[in-house]
Amino acid sequence: MENNETYAIGTVGVKWGPLEQAQWLAVQDVKRSYADDVLSQLEALASQFDIKEYASLDYASGSFPLFSLRSLTWEQSKPNVLITGGVHGYETSGVHGALRFAATAAQDYHDRFNLLIVPCVSPWAYETINRWNPNALDPNRSFYQNSPVQESAALMNLVSDIEFLMHIDLHETTDTDNSEFRPALGARDAVEHKEWAIPDGFYTVGDTLKPCPEFQKAIIQSVEKVTHIAPEDESGRLIGEILQQRGVINYATKALGLCAGLTNAKFVSTTEVYPDSPKVDNENCIQAQVAAVTGALNFVAENEY
Image (cartoon, rainbow, N blue to C red; front, side, top):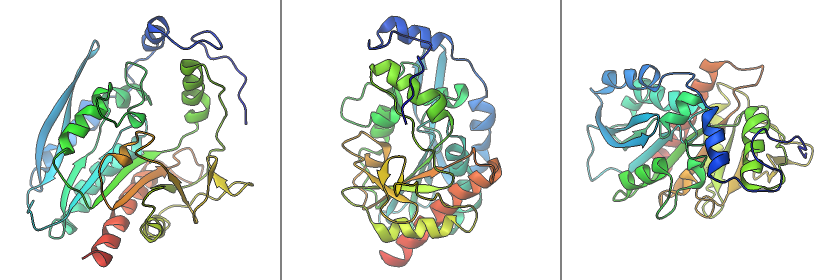
C-alpha cells in the first residue's frame, strides 16, 4: 500500500541533511521518564543480578546511563543467554517485558543459564517515544562495525567478548509504524514509502541463515497461552514477508544490521507484539514478552543440553 502524503519535514525527492535532521529533533519532546519507569526498578533486582552501567549516551539534551543485568550465579560451565529490550525505545512492552522477566521468572533459569539482560538499549527514544535516536538514526539498522549509533555501538561493546547460545530481542509492531515512522523514513531517505499491512497479533522474526523453526514454534506456542498470534494477510505474508510457519517470518539479521544479528548465537528470535490491538492491553503485551522469553529458554533447556 502506497502512502502519497507529504511528510512535514523535508522536500520530496531530496534526502535530509543537517537542517532537516535539526528540524525533526526540534519537534521531539519528552513524554515519559526513563529514570522513573526503568531505572527505579533495578535496585529490587540486585538479589539476582549484578547490575552494571555499561555505557552512557551523551546528547545535547542530556546523558543517559545504560544498564545491564548479569546473573550473580554466572559460571563458565553454563551457556550464555542475551535478552534485549528497547532497541526501539517506543516499543514499550519490550522494555517492560525484559524487566518483568527479570523480576518474576529469571529465578527459574539461573541454575541452567547465565543470563545477560539489557532492558532498555535506547532510553532517549523511550522517553520521546521514538524509533530513532536524536541523530535520526535507527539503532536496529546499525549493529555493524564502526557503527555511528551510540546505542548500537555500546551494546556491541558490552557483548563483544561473550559467546551466546541464545539471543531474544523484544520488539513491537505498532500503528505508528505506518502513521509516523515509515513516512519519516521515506522522507529522510527520499524513497517511496509503502505502508505495511500491520498484523493484529504476536509474531516472531527468525534469522534467514539459522531459522531454527522448532525454536520459533516453541515461542509461538508459549505466547499463545496469553495472547493471540498474528494471522497471515491475504497474500500469505506478514509485513510483506513470506510466512515460514504460523506467526513466523525470517529476516537476514546481520545483513540488515539488526540487533538479532549482534551475536553468533545458535538460537535467535525477535519478538513482535501488537499493542494497538483491541484484544490486548499493556499488561497483556508485557505478559506476551515474558512468555516469549520463557518459551525460548524452556525449548533450549529441553533440547540443547
